[in-house]
Image 1 (cartoon, rainbow, N blue to C red):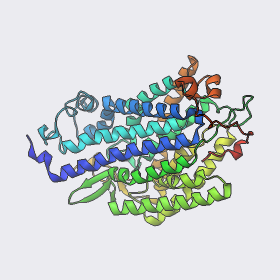
Image 2: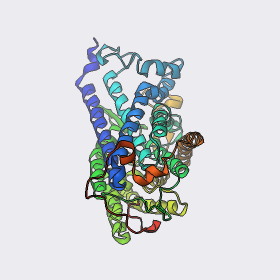
Image 3: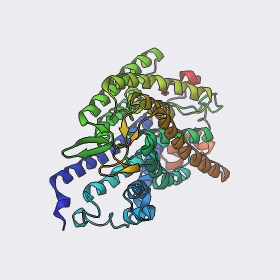
Image 4: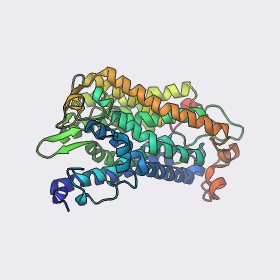
Length: 460
């Protein structure tokens, strides 16, 4: 037994990540409520089933071995021989560090063992949230089989690889100046790009842009659920944000990329981003007569400021957060012009994520980042500097990492005829045709007259 592994400080840090796990699951629940509010009544149950199964598969993939890819960076920095294979042998599902109680692990081999073990499910739920976002971009038209296969690939390989590249103080891009904090690169930009490619290949839902002979068209069955989902996300996000960093007793708080920060500063910046996004989203909602902007405006503020929370100042997050709904509005307009039926994830995550990541490079230009305590040279503490150029490199890298595999998998399933649901299923609804669930008596309204895409009520 190694008593030094069970100090009060270490137990407290482990509990912070336990709260983070719960908070991320609440975010997944919030995303599910948003989707349930914006799909047709005949597709609500299948939407929940797909999302739940997809996120579980992604989480299982990360637990099986995906987490080892993220640990690879630490083995490289600390000079562990064969860093990738050692990370896999230690941190795959049957690895030594995954199957030994923390107080039985020599701190000379793995200090803070309990903290690092709890971080595994924290990271796994992060992958779950990534897959939940991707699914939100393709609801009502993707087949379950292809979705589940993609979920495993995302969880086991792509999501942890994105984290390895740019989320962590010793990651290859972080050590050259790429800065992230709240998962803007591996979560928002990655999921937004993946969803964009899938939405493009799946084609618009029936009646999304032009009338369909059957009268079928996208219809938000309960828009009020969007507000409930957003409130759950806002409740959970501060806990997740604090978990995106290092709490060092006696020294303070550092962002995940080893930037000097503070929990108080993070919360001040978070508040300014949420309030600014909420106010501007409310203005847009009233001008556009579209309540969805009022619901999701605060989320736009969160996303666009996600990389700035640890290194920015409140007034900067206020300004940038106010731009979030405007960027979402412009991205949604671009999607309509391109006739791509994706009015949630791309406008919410990809557009504001890219703009926010690059803007952070200007706001925090020259801030010290990267490395780890006690190391020197290429992995030395805060040896790198944040620049807008490296932020752009990070954006391009993650877009390619998400976009190319998404396209390859989409083309594969198209080739074997199994990416999109049959037209008859889409017209009749997935719940009755796939699950034998009929709409409640008296609650099935006739399909109203077709609106144009610019009038669609469920856009962001």
